[in-house]
Image (cartoon, rainbow, N blue to C red; front, side, top):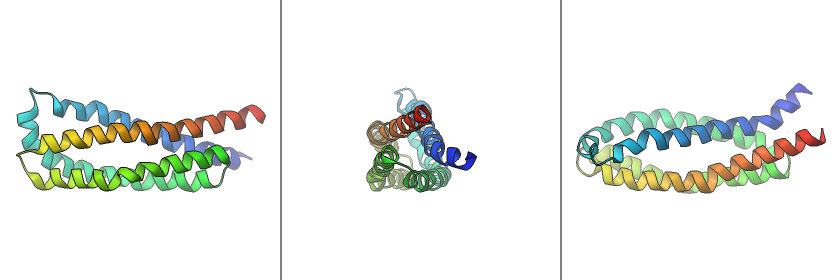
Length: 147
């Protein structure tokens, strides 16, 4: 019984984790776009994104597949959450393109590419991550109320 409860709540945990990651990206990346920091950011972003990207991909390729596997095992809201969660990956080619460009760009123009990635990341979070999390939360709450 405990394993079943864990299985049903796990997609909520994993999407909460990734949603937290997305929100914190907003907080710590926004400072690179401040006018007083842009000149320094142009020199720093190439190196920083290279390190951040490698570490971030470990998180992405761990949490998302765990969410998918556990969501498949559960019910309709989890299926809907699963589909919306996969929608996150629709932006992945564009995100990889932006981040690869920053890594290759060096010092000039990194901030402008980063600004485009940052905007895309906010839209992706709002259109994919928040709805997926909402579906998993709703399913968990419905399941708990009928239990």
